[in-house]
Length: 285
Image 1: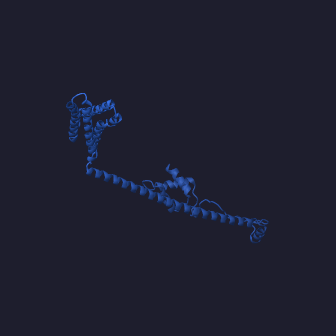
Image 2: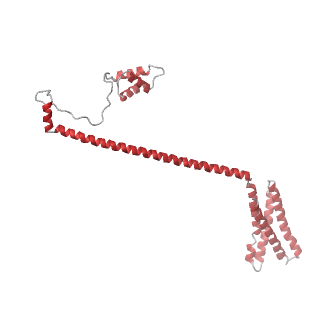
């Protein structure tokens, strides 16, 4: 994996060193003996290579030195400055020389990228563990999404079933109400008819001489609930409160409303649910 970053850095370094040495020999060779120019070029490349080797040694030990890094960048900038100065003083091909003047700085940048790669590199085992964790997280997220979609579909089906059942009940109630309305209208027409009145007069016993008793229409509409215990007299609010309080405190701790109501009914007492609950609230307050 290191070859992906180290090979470009090595290649760029070699090219920049050869280019720097050639430029120094060609440029300074006209003003001084070429062996001296060669020594100058080798000095620049040698200093750069020495600092680079020391940086790589420190990196292999997991350490780094800011001073060595600064010196290495200084050698790279010197090489770049030499190439730029040569390009600006060249009589021809100035643009071509400027185009390659950035190679030393680029080589240093590639070594920087390689160092960052090494500091953040992980072993195959660690990479496998990370992939396993990521896959597990993706699996859990997919299962959670599937569960949410299933719950949503189930809730939608339930609501649809409840809605359809409610619609059926509403249709039945509307149909029943319509039937009752027609029946009530028929009874009212029969009651108010003259022929019906004469027929009822002939078969109904008169309570008062000269007065024909009338018959009432059946009640159609909401009615109050009627207690089933017909033999028990209706209780007043005071008597109902006293009876509820007596049943409630017949056991320690005091009975709950449901237990009190069950014992109240079992004892044969009669009271509507509304009155019984109101008495409970008054007693328990």
